[in-house]
Length: 474
Image (tube, rainbow, N blue to C red; front, side, top):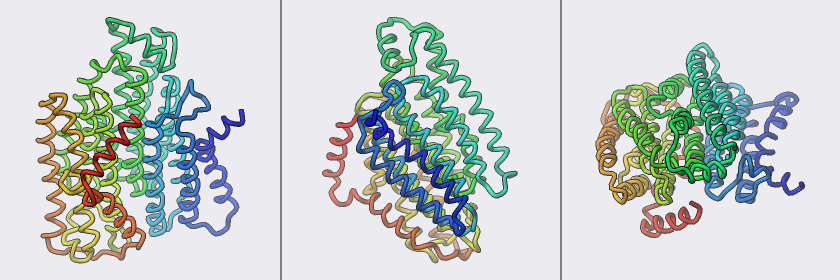
């Protein structure tokens, strides 16, 4: 019994932030955004530490069970949240706005992500996904002018309710057929079936469709683009950088642990959403003048790219997609760090025309953004090159030439979108004066650039050891 309490320490610390943060918010007279950012970071360090210590231990294995693979997905998501909490405090300090509710909602989502990534039962999905959607809506509403984001939150809430109902219906159908919610029992039941009933296939479509909505893939992406356009920058960064890792990890866990018998049926479905997201994401990024929306479409492209690599859910496919997704998230984190430095007269800039000639005043920040975009395009010697290479190698091995063609076409448009930004920053005249950026932004940019260019040290050693490590946890 006592051992279970120790195993639950990551979840206890995630929930504990509400208690301690609430007491600080109520009784401490002097409060700054940095107060709650520091508190959030302390609790998140404890969560990361105990998640690693108990990486293969579970208090309730019939509901959720930690595995090396789920732990590494959660750990990277927590690390991104930790870094973004630190950077977000700079936004709250600049705007002089309270931050406790933002961090509280984020911790609620992290608690939901913790359960989702390790779920071993469909009942866990049926409970935790609506929980996540509820707090997602609350996060979108974290804005000083709620009228601007309320229509977006309502639209998201409506579609979230629809997909949660579909999820529940899919789970109910599978339960009626198998008599269980447990992944292992459902996997064994369908593995013994030679032909699947239409209702079984419909249930799988409903459940997978819910994950496509969570990932904001085309055509379920409009709420995400609208949120990135109107929500405050801390919210935009969090929903771009943290959830995708968890959702992809949960989808892999669901397919390999529960619905593996439906892999051949699910593969074309995932290809459909991946191809749509690749093409629409890449094409739309070219036509956007709002820099946040431009990179929102690029993030959808990145998720679509990762999905193409894992449609068959083989060991090599999972490794390739995981490697690519980590690198893409690191690149996008760098882009959002630069966004925190795009500030003029106290206001954060989102119109791309106002960053003309940016490099003349902020050469280091402009160079960092250039490196991050090169990584998103997949140019050597950035880590992005190895991310693309891992996916392409896997597609070649599977003889997926159609997907290869789609990837190459979409990549050309992604490169075009990035070169538009480069042209405006480096070759257009200066039109705005920018406020001095916080030193923390430069420190974070330096660390991120170092990671992105880590392949310069010893590319062969880096990629071979990465593959060995990832192969051991898949």
